[in-house]
Amino acid sequence: MTPLLLIAAIFAIAIIAGFLGSLLGLGGGIIVVPALTLLFGIDIRLAIGASIISVIATSSGAAAAYVKEHLANLRVAMFLEIGTTLGAISGAYIAGIVHTRLLFILFGLLLAYSALAMLKKRHEAHGAVYVSPIADRLGLHSSYYDEGLGQQIDYRVSRPITGLGLMYLAGAASGLLGIGSGALKVPAMDLAMRLPMKVSTATSNFMIGVTAAASAGLYFVRGQIDPVIAAPVAAGVLLGATVGSRFLGRIESRVIRVIFIIVLAVVSVEMFVKGVL
Amino acid sequence: MKAETLISWLLRIGVGVSAALAVIGMIVIVFHHPTNVIGHRMTNVREVLDSIRAGHGQGIAMLGLLLLIATPVMRVAVSIGIFVRERDFTFVLITTTVLLLLLLSFVLGAAGG
Image (cartoon, rainbow over all chains, first blue to last red; front, side):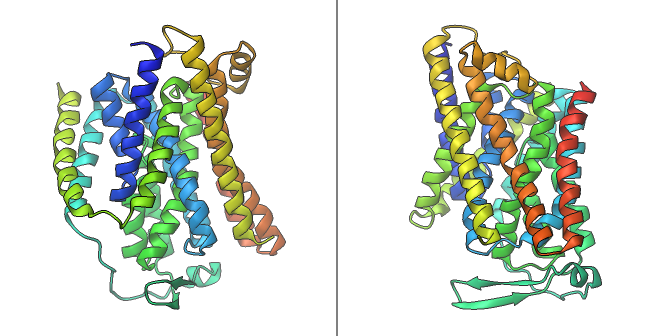
């Protein structure tokens, strides 16, 4: 393939990945990595390196907006980033020494999990709020303005240490597979720490960039970031996600959801098979 | 300037400039290098600068990507300054730990080969 064709093809796929990702609330990485490996036969380590770069681009772009709207809780984010960066370093380190077959298998499992998660709709978690002296001492409790309700909502943070542990795992998944792993961060904050759903989503997005930067540093030094692949992926996903966020709420996403769940399931099997055979 | 506004602008500028460099790099690759573009390994900043000096699009794109990786790192560094200004030393410690972990990731990558 000529450079023009290769770059144009990767760029086009990345735009689609970013667009669908932002419509469906997934990161682009979950689409980009299977596309690069299955369609172009690109080394999965290089695909993961390119994906993590696109994760930084989209999350930083989204974070800029969330921070301004005061939706992201900066103190909770900083505290939990100790867990996510440690996890990311562990994950990225392990990714460099295991067989690529294992990466395919894990990625297949991740896709299957995402397909299942998409079948279920997210609901506001209702349950006991735990008193946490650590959260008090760190001053993690905060408030946000809810546009839907038209009022300021105060909230308290539960179980920060459990949250920190879960973030280590989310970070490890991110470093291992080159994904943002928002799908793991958000439930940890919703369910374990009892943050309001909107705050969880915004804070997760804010943290993803730092988590991904920890993995990306390691990938770069290891030679897993090839600019010919990573540049069109980053630019394409960023463009696709920006356009996608404009369409959010304007098009009926239920049909896309159902189609996408089927696609995820099929791709999951393909990745799995590639890892096993 | 308010902390949130500062961080928001830092993120916007970082993403904007790095995306622009990545696109310029892509254009230079397409027009200058007819074959064998993948496998141009660059694993440290000096190799990236050498590649740019040689006029390779790969180097320009890589500089953009490095700047993108540095954007969240800079956000953390700026946050330390904000917590120092607020005299919140617990969070100065927490944020400094995160920054050190980020810097450690580069060292560990080099050590792990």
